[in-house]
Image (tube, rainbow, N blue to C red):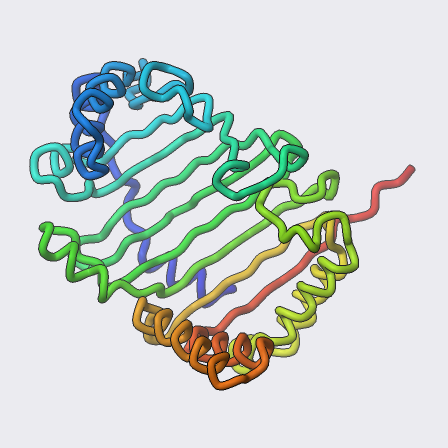
Length: 306
C-alpha cells in the first residue's frame, strides 16, 4: 500500500485550475464530442440545446430533457481544465471533472430489477503531458446506504498533444499503479447493482466458492500469502460483507494492451488444445499479471451492540 501511495504522490501536482464553464463552452464541447460519436445532425442539435451551465460554472445535462429521454441518470455535470484544447484543437483537455446523480447501471451491467441502485458518481481525471501520464485522482461510486467504491490510478506512455499521437498512445499506454477501496455497510446484497451470473444469484455459498476459486488461481509472486489470506477473509463474508477492502496493484514495466491481448490469445489456444477451462484461466492470469504485484487489506466492521 505504501509503495502505491508513493507512486500516486509522485504523480500528483498542484490542483488543476478548472475553467468556469459557460453555456456556450458547454455546448461547443458537446458538439465536438457528438461529432466523435458520429451523431446525426438533428440529434446533435437537439441535445446541444438541452445543455446548460450551473451558477457554479459546471456544464449540466438533465436526464429526460430533449435528446436525453433515455438517459440513465438524473443529472450529469462536467467541467474541464483548458477546455479550448478540446473545442479548438480536438485534443483532450488537461483535466476533467464529472459528477453524476441518480445513476442507474442496471441496463449497462445487465442487472435485474431487484438489484437496481440509485447511485452517484464523482471523478477527477487529469493528464501530465510532459510525463506522458493520465492520472485518475479519484473516482467514487456511492449509493444512499453508505456503501462506496473508490478508485485511483496512473496510466503511463500516453501522449495526447495531437490526434496522431493519440492514435500511437492506444498501443503504448500501460497501467502503472492503482488503488481500489470499498467501504461496505453490509446492509445490501450487491450494493452497486453490478451484474451477477444467473447461476450465482440467490446462492451465497456459490458466490463465496466462486470468489475462493478465483483467489486461489492468482499466481504466486503476484500476491503473497498475507494478501491471499485477506482476500479469502473478505470472500468468506460474502454476499453482504461489512467493512473496508483496500486493494493496491502496481506493474513494474507497465501493463499494456499487448500483454492483455497475449493473455487472451494464449488462453484461447490452451482451450483449443483441450486444456481444462480451469487450466486455461490460470494460464491467462499468469500472462496477464506477469510483472504485477497486488496487496490487499480487509478490515471487517466492528460488531454493533444490540
